[in-house]
Image (tube, rainbow, N blue to C red):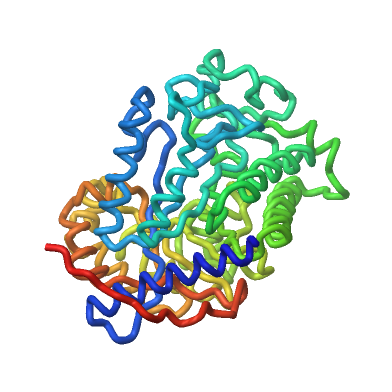
Length: 426
């Protein structure tokens, strides 16, 4: 029954897209992921505040999706879990305070935002990837008094690593990895999502001041024969990524699994196979070996956060994109693009150029393994700084695109659409 539903959904997307192509007069459909991160953490994208009525929340979400659709977006990455909380009905973690104003409080009247956005996106031919922060538990521990009694930071305080006011679930504890996997697998089993998506928060980023986290006790208890702490931390994340991939594949093999890692794996001066850059390195600074994940086929796609401009000396988009393209192989690369920096790039004046984002998209299309892009964040695209949204809907995304095929997941296409009809309104 599940496979039948999947095939029917695939047929619907194909039929809708082919109808769109016939109306737009494009004879050979282009395959390209055109995505947007819909951020719910601290109400960045949706809802606009944490105390809105259910009707207002739903209206805002529909308006947001309508605007994304008219811009040409065909995939959304919807943040369902930002700090061990839930933007969906969960028996494992409390409702997010970003939805209702108080962690653990359910929306009233009752509804499920994840279920709601899936249904709305199905009507618009848009994929939905459920976006999880795997290990962030409390973004600011000064607010712990307002957290629900059943939040994991309260029920399992021994699982927490502290760095300043940040608390994360310790990736070195085997039960922690089991727990996080159980959370996203619960969503996978109960919801008709197209993808499971992780962002770049694994071990904490290096602090700008103060002491880093201390995982001495965890290393002593769970070293697994490692003597090098950094190698052990990387292996903790590798184990988690590999098990996540295998778990998803075992239950719903057609659902895509991807990660949005920090945009620099290693600099060339640290590793000859790294990029010609000079910035923070995910491999050694946050223990995320994204190159290994894709080379070992533990992910279906990577969306590296290439949040720098073409021409930026320390981390040039024009240098990083070809480097990531070279890793693709049978897996997809989608460029993570910094819409939030347009006309707001600080000392990098390249972001004041109207052509910066359009030129990045054109560069993406020149690299075979780069099969699309995703923008952070939705509000920055829709705000249209320097006409970025106009450039998308009137030029670069003017004609609709099919999502890229992923033969590694399923190489049997749905039957061709037939008996299509079109009706002109207005």
